[in-house]
Length: 236
Image (cartoon, rainbow, N blue to C red; front, side):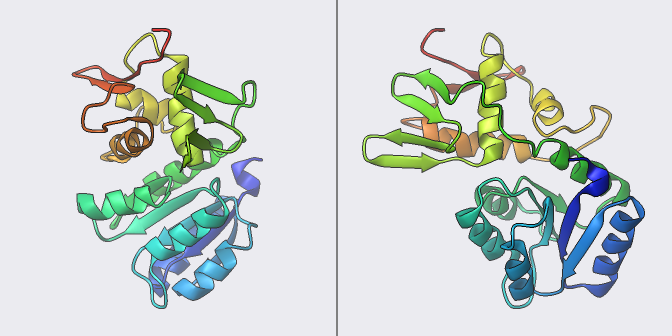
């Protein structure tokens, strides 16, 4: 799949913004569909025909958070970028926790939005299936194909992006990985982009809640001060 043939769904109730985004992406060779309220947006999103969904948070009928949650219940791999006028940590965490790949706060740079859409699309390929499992330790083995970790009777479900982060950290487990490197290699963002985003940090926190016995005292996914994040596996 190339971005020139990618099909986007834009869910945005403000006519001027929606029209501007449609014009932008059509001009750059995308196929674009749109919805002006939450109910229509959810119906279209669940059709499974879009390579990426641009999803506003504040919508009539159903808000973006509820739409994102409904999408994730049916499709863990659908790329989603949330557009929001809200920029508090709590609101950002909520969107990413529900499974959005990224968020962009309004007002945003049109050029940066385009670059970030391209980056998410580049990373929306199938997960590498050379190995069906990611073994962190004897108790923490992640089923890559099914994006899940089972411990006893408890199953933790991962998003595609969370598994990609874990895979990259596993491939480089001999060293700490800087957050900028994760943005570049996992999210596909150009090193020259001056991004103010907590996407990496929030994804790390989400992963810790799933793989750590005590997320406040992580033993498997640790922070190395001034250097980045390191995945500590049983054979380290």
